[in-house]
Image (cartoon, rainbow, N blue to C red; front, top):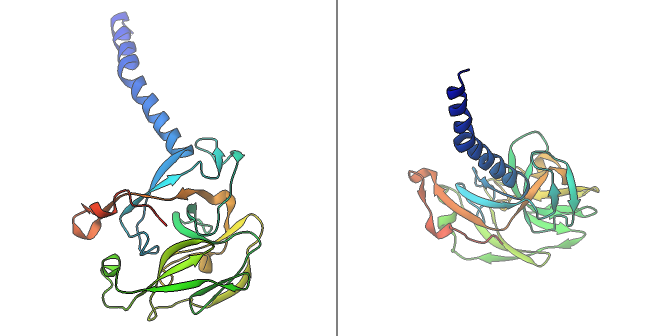
Length: 232
């Protein structure tokens, strides 16, 4: 190669290509090990999370992993009941977002869509007519929204009596190192009732906030009222 052409190529690498590569690698490593976002494509977590929400994923919530791998260097916490977690589906499906219902050692039962954990029935308060917009596109069905009091964490959950595919379930004991997860949209969620327990090493991180939200049914216009909304 001609020396002048080689010098130009070297300069191009140093001043253009290398900085871009460094930024891409650093950004990818940050998203792999520290924080990321997850696009929610379905309504399985209604009314807390709706389709089109982009949620923040804290990958340092439970420990530190080597970037781009599943190797865990440190662990300082574990998922707790009521937390919203992002994980890889046990059956090989895509990343999912659900709420932790049962931790290792818990006995989980569902009776008439009412959770019973370790023999204690969770408490529910009916929400009266506040969330019609949160279940948009489903006006052909009657929904009931409740506040579920789960282990000191209050969050909204939704039932659809006309659907109710698995309102009764268990009892079942959560094994060591695993978690039982469910969607807040109890009659419209594919969760541990269908694919089983989620292993701790499948958990990507914890989410506690919506970053932004785009409405796919309305030309992907932003839902400004959902920006930076905390998750219960």
